Length: 255
Length: 120
Image (tube, rainbow over all chains, first blue to last red; front, side, top):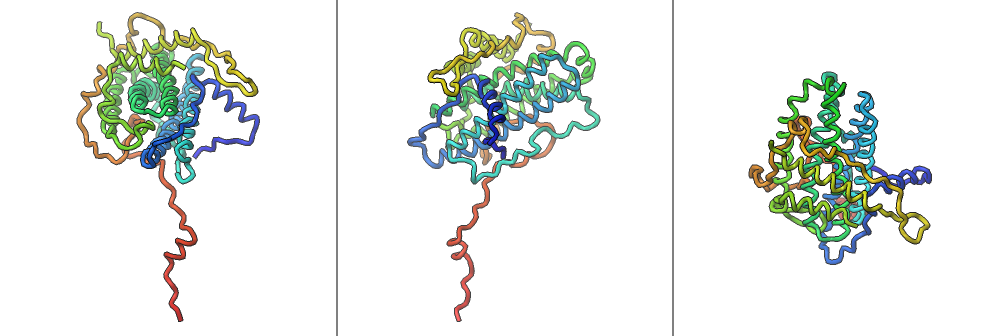
């Protein structure tokens, strides 16, 4: 498990710098009046899982930054990815804060070691690995997560949890948009040349990944405890018109 | 020409975000200040070009129309909910990364569980 506290004043300044990039101030802790132990405990475990999810994104996007620097990708692309890494670190902190609200993690073992992608291997060129990370983890996974996070947000009724989802949702929308912009970088210049053999397969890869993700999300939208605390949705929560999703994302931005 | 609904959504959300951040400066509390101080955050630049039509490469990767209802029916008896699924990079199962630590037995419990010594 990652240690959030530090006794270094200098390092704390970097944490504050990172906090300052949040689209909204951190939510205040919830009161949890009327929340049953069953709901709280279910939500605590789910949010502990979200610590892993967010931290995994830190690892994946860090690999992407390494690849892009090796490939001499445009400066703006590097800036975008380093911001994504920061956002995911901030999300890790947010998820850990929610776990603390719900009882803490002292009795949990949260394994964050080697949480990134499987090794690239010697047969996959750096450009193709970077292309696949952008396509799969940013364009597809982040786009799909926008829909799912919004479903959890709408299902939640505890204001602090809703506010937490607001932060995640605003950032995820931007990550998905960044993915599209980064992908465009691989269709011109030396990056396009370096991954020419992989470009024709992207559409099928995206379709397969989307189908897998949606199947997983649908299969796990089974209700259960913790709905008010962002830990449970039902199948019907995933069916949502895009126009209302857009309205919902705009609401998330309102302070 | 067919424009993918998901791409339109992302484009509109990105444009909306740009408009939103361009018209208001986020405020966050600053240590020692009695009122929130506007941070000098730059408006987020448009992350996608405001082109009216998607680029050819964007059309190429356009996802299928979003319709969650079309997802195949699956067994809903899965014991764990995945709140954030990931794409599959390799075959096999992901390790379980969140577990409850074994509860250490309290001294009283240990005493109760320990076999009683035979009394002389």
